[in-house]
Amino acid sequence: MLAVAATTVPDGVGLDVLLAASFRIPVYLNIALPEVVTDFAIGNIVEALKPLNSELNDYLSDSDTAHLADALGPGLQNLHRALRDCFGLWQLGKGPWKSQRLDLRLGVPDIAGRPTAYPVLKILIDGTEKLAGRDRQYTGWHPADILGPGSPLLPTEPARRVALYVNAAGGPATGCLAAYVKDFGDQVTWADFRLFEGVYHAPTISPNPDGGDWRIGIVPPVFDAAQYRAEVQRVSTERAWKAEPWQTALLLDQYLSADPGALCPWNLGWAEPHGEATGMFSVTLWDDHCDRGLVVDLVAGSGTPERRARQMADSLLTIPSHQWPRTRPTQRQTSSLARPLRARSTGKPG
Image (cartoon, rainbow, N blue to C red; front, side):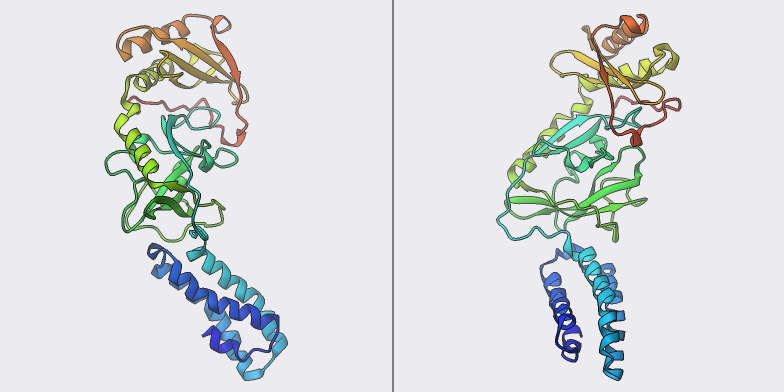
C-alpha cells in the first residue's frame, strides 16, 4: 500500500522516508523470529498504517502537499515505533557474533534491607551481572524456580519468552525482564527483551505474553551453545541451594530472626556462606534506615546444619555488638531499593 501510494507523493524528503518505510515492513517480517510475528504485533502495525493510509487518500483528493508533509512526520514515526516494538529489538545484526560466557551463581538480592526470599540465581555475562540494571533494580529467581531438567534457561522450539530477572524489591508482580531464549545452532541468544508488569508469576507462562515495554535498551547477549548448556546443567545438577552451606545459612537466618530485638541496634539483613569450602558464614545487618550496614563473619563448628547454625546464632546473640569479632562495614548505593526493616520476612531453608 505504501509503495503504491508513494508514487503519487512529490519528490523530496517525504518520498524518501515513505519509500524507506514501505521497504522495511517486508524486511522485518521476513527476518523476524516466528515467535514474535503474532496477531498482536500485526495488529499494532495495521493500526500505525491506518493514519498514513487516510492521509494519503486525502492527498489523492486535494493534492495538498504542505498538509501531507506535515502529516507524514508523526505518522511515519508511529509506524517506525510499531515496527521496532514488534520486530526490531530482537535482531542481532550481521554475524558472526562474538560469544559471551554465562556463569550462574547463588547469592542475595542487591537491596539494602531484608530480601523477601533468598538465595537467588545471579546471572553473570562475561563476569558481570548485566541484567541487574544500573541501580541493581532487578535480581534472579529462586534457583529451584528456574533450574532443573526442564530449565526455562534451556532453548526450545518454538522459543519461549522467559522472565530472566524480577524486580528486586517487589518481585515478579512489579516487574520482569523477559526475552526469548533462542537456539542458533552453535550459539544461544536471549532476544527481544521486554519489561512486563503484573504478567509473570513464574519464569515461563503459556502462551508467550504479547506487549511489554521494549524501551529498556538491553543488547541481546549471545553465548557459545556448548558452554551455555554445560553451565545450566552444572548448576541444576549441583543444587547448591539444597547443600549444607546454604541450608546452614538459612537456618542461621531463621534462628537470628526469631528474636528481632536481640541484635539491637542492628537489624537482620541476611546470612550467607562466606566461601563455602572454608566453613565460614557472613551475617549482614542494617541500621533502621538502611543507610549503614555491618557484616559479621562467623566460623561454623562441626555437626549438622542445625547444630552449626545454632552455635553461630548463640555466639552472636550472647556477645555485645561492640565485641563481635571479624566485622566490616558495608553500604548499599541503591537506597531506592531499601526495604523497611521493622516489617520483616525471613529466609527459609529448602
